[in-house]
Length: 227
Image (cartoon, rainbow, N blue to C red; front, side):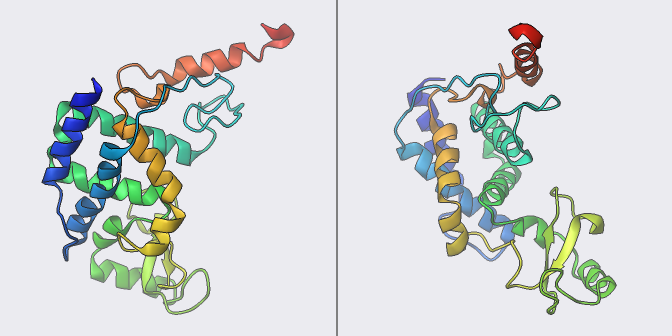
């Protein structure tokens, strides 16, 4: 995909996103997606990165893991987001509202803002039962629990949640100033990688990325005798 068509697709996407935050968390997720998309349109192109097999393909950190090419779960998530976003932008499925909600939520999560949209899907009655099971206490400070944070995945099952108060919770509303500040570098990286005319990193390309091949090269570089 050339730079012109990439930018034009991003501009078309921007035109479908809400211009102002609305009451529903679903619409707020779509509204927030405007931020990285707008940045991606304006950002300058950069050259492709060619990481060594002994490095994480997402961040270039030295990595000797054998089961995954990534140095962390977070790098895996970032790589997956960029790869899928670029793919759906090309196929135009990104113009579906549900895709926009999902991607807005993922960027916010990567920036450290938690999962406000996922939280909004928990029924009030289920949330009340969850708090009651934990004596209504925040798992961090022991104060009154008012919300939840997700422990590992996006799953809303009780086993993946922990009760939190508003002060201790990682999860913040879309657009929260503190999250915007702490996640500024992540946001810039996301914008650069979704906006570049060609995939910047090998793991950004849906059609060519082969994580198993990356691992095999890593393993071959660490054989006895330097083979």
